[in-house]
Image (cartoon, rainbow, N blue to C red; front, side):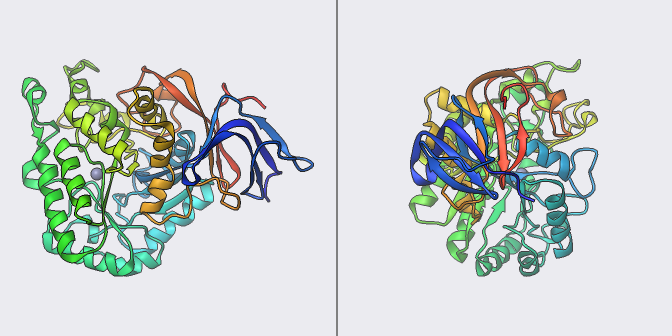
Amino acid sequence: MMPPPLALAGGRVMDPARGFDRVADVLIIDGCIAAVGQGLGYPDGARVIDVAGCVVAPGFVDLHCHLREPGQDHKETLRSGLAAAAAGGFTTVCCMPNTVPPLDVPERVRLVRERAAAVSPVCLHVIAAISAGQQGARLAPLRELATAGAVPFSDDGRPVWNATVMREALRTAASLGLPLSVHEEDPQLAAGGVMNAGATAARLGLRGLPAAAEEAMIARDLALLAAEGGRLHIAHVSTRGAVALLRDARTRGLAVSAEATPHHLTLTEDLVARPWNGRPYDTRTKVNPPLRTPADVAALVAGLADGTIATIATDHAPHAAADKRCPYEEAAFGISLFETALASVLSLVQGGHLGLAALIERLTSGPARLFGLDVGTLAPGARADVTVFDPDAQWTVRAASFLSRGHNTPLDGATVRGRVVLTLAGGREAYRQPTVLQG
Ligand SMILES: [Zn+2]
């Protein structure tokens, strides 16, 4: 049964897909956007929520997260992960296939989609494996995976090390009209690395992950893309050289897109050297690709602003506490991102690096277009995926109170600005910030 008609009254409605930006009401009926404008008449029985002072945006779309189900329920479940997504303003998320076992057969793709639909109104899309078992040695059944609803394919967590398999994957995915999302890392150059290669790593005595490991693999895949056609989406770009490669490839007309994460857009490697948990470094910063240098961050932000990087993706990667309370070398790669993503990237607007409309575009219609998802706008008739946020609300990150089972973030205890107050997915209330929004 659908909830009664709902009106979000008096917010700043921003819908970059339509160039819409003004104070207006949004009327939602039967799970869809019925009207957007000023002085709308409300139907009888409508619930009205005053959102004056807030931004009303299309629900955010995340092309990259890890929800750990099946197989690692102690880190996250579909229920907890999708609840955390809603708390972060995300109404459509794409989960990576590196579960246990991996999502490399159609039955498992169907199962995860069905289970997600049963536990949350947030829309889940499954990214299926490129190679069988994500081992990189031979292709997974991409055609059957696509029939089961996979959009698109990725071996994320690791690169497709075998160039012949990568070439075959590009050809097959192209014939299916789907892109490949790739984790770019040369396995030999990256072997054993745990943080960005450089002076900080040397000082801490930690093995480095060089920028060249990422850039060499991107260069290989751009060469394969130029030769074979298809569409390539580069996951979590993290280096200045990678942004330069992308910009050049796009200038040459190659069908390549890219995402950057909130942490790579805002944090640098010096955070690794902050003492934590009785050790001279902070394992909460351990992530792959690693946090890089200020020059890398500046290049990513410029790439996001000029559209070289078309979307912000979270790479939400939850882990259990024990996975981080250990030496840096042994700690798991990954940060819980959903619930801090918006505040992190709003700092780019506050810093004058890009406008709020452009930022919202990179969180909504931008990613939707890349994976061909029919969401990301508040146009009348669209599914009512809506995120309401207060861009000025200051709050302190308390990882222990995350809805995600993964409580790991280097932002724990930090005061940030910008907070999601209400998330509607298909017209249903998926999240409401209890202390901010009344009514
Ligand atoms: Zn990855």
